Image 1 (cartoon, chains in turn cyan, orange):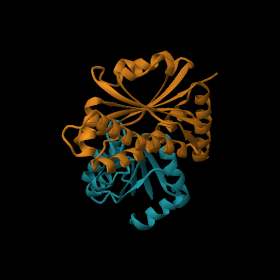
Image 2 (cartoon, each protein chain N blue to C red; image 1 turned 180 degrees about the vertical axis):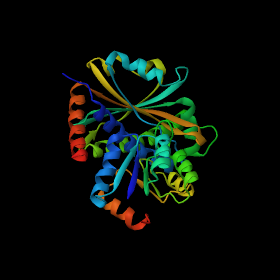
Image 3 (cartoon, rainbow over the protein chains, first blue to last red; image 1 turned 30 degrees about the vertical axis):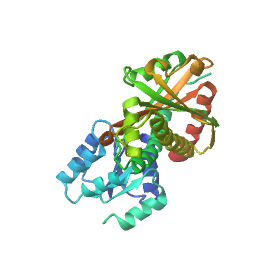
Image 4 (tube, rainbow over the protein chains, first blue to last red; image 1 turned 120 degrees about the vertical axis):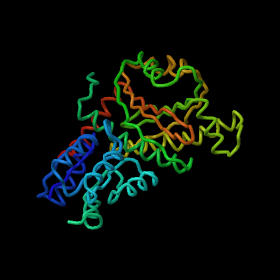
Length: 120
Length: 204
């Protein structure tokens, strides 16, 4: 399984990756530091799952989500954000994200994501 | 004393602030019944005599401002300052009191109500991210011009100040404010220690 982790913060990416390594130790992990890199990486790597932040420089997560869904309608995108407003969640769900979780993600939440949101 | 931060420490601090601002934005969104746009927090370490210029450069110097300062103490000690323009404050008063022309006292009360939620949420969440706790002092509220926001008294005793700043932005309601967390000298070294522990925890 190939997983793309997108966040401008290294510690935020590491936090997601730490939980991913427990839940899916054999997954191939790819990283991107902004929305534009994420879109390019999605085109090239076609990951099975994307963990996407919203507040990022260059291209934010809303735009990246839109572009990834244009590339692949079936893309499985989980938004992980500090923005916990209900409207933010509504926006990303309408744009095609599988679900949205508040930062930081721990192992229990990661297990829940793979049980409830992701089709493998 | 070495008061510099490396790239990983800055990255971690920015991310912890991002999470804290996210919580504060959600609380404000509930209060205002509006959607807030989040901005990437900015981290700067400057000499104390540069603070006034740094703050003036981030706001419109022609406006008057409500300035709320709240000290907090603990392993991570400092000051949380919320700066909101008169226009934004009036819009806040209009919205919270549902009246067209709120009085100065009503605007004052609206700003205090907003700031109570804001500073306690931001600092509490930030300290939670840093695995520590702080005690709050009673906040002070002043109505000032841009040049008077930082006084000699604020910076006189310190050499270096770390500024963690961001914008709270509710476009639909035309309400926008700047949040600054100021930490000085020894507290910067203590903050760096807390960040290192957290980095170690996550990076393993």
